[in-house]
Image (cartoon, rainbow, N blue to C red):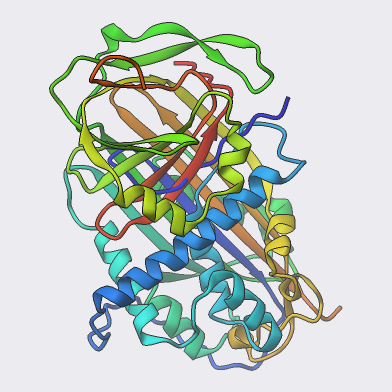
Length: 432
């Protein structure tokens, strides 16, 4: 049986994610500059239309990549991932891409290079995710540069200024020590949820020149919490048609109203977190409708239409507790299937990083974790882009939302609608 989990969208849950980009390259005589990240003062203000366009860009990627992961025959276990983390890692890498390599990445990511409005969006979202709120959320980027290695000032300026990445020199000739240092940064920025993302074997002591990292962390509680005393064991129908017993949270008979809508194929429910700036969207297929059917039809336009049609309703909610720890995933195949192909070949052009056509992506790796319980949610994810040298309804008026069969869910930032995490639950499992 094929069981999967995947996640998107930020909500008032408890989430964490991080991305890491490994850039392995040879020495070049390109100018170098040690700059500290600083807030740009000359970024243009974004119009509502521009913000909406960039949110659509990230969400389009989220749904397209989610479907690729879900359909991948190698994904035989529960799948959970952060499209925001993957997108951010790839966007920073794309900043240094040129020619056909850049064109393919632009087609998939749908973002322009050297574009002030996109950089404004990236910087604004970074600032927004790091502000003080009723919940805890933060994101961070970093560049780990080989000692005495020089890269283009323009590339450093871009990732440090707009992505607010910090820079640190590191000795890649000692892979174990380098991996330990970077892993500690990942742990510190994901509340220790993502550990040992990088192994010494990922770092070639001769070829590694630059590693870019991104991390995002979220910790929040439900706006309306589930009472642990009401949690009970209930049946859950597996994709095989068999039933299993799962620990299920119950919220019924309250005066609280929740955003809700439904179509011929599914019910859609929004569960907000404290502060009402992050929420979880749950899509529950109706009886006899396979989860795969709903996921295959997912796209940003359809999702927005669903979200816009939501209305406040009284809902009786039955939601399984679940905890997922996704092992390290290789994302090469789904990214190539989307259209990023040249970047993985020796013909790649990342001369915007070094000034030379000496790099290509060897692997894109991802690891994630999520815990959903009565109080809220905790989640984390990490992405690594490794680059190597190219040379060498019932009768009651209340609505029943009973997640007793496979469903999908997303975590989103409500202010912008940006999807941060996305997933499916086909076989809930929870160990305290």
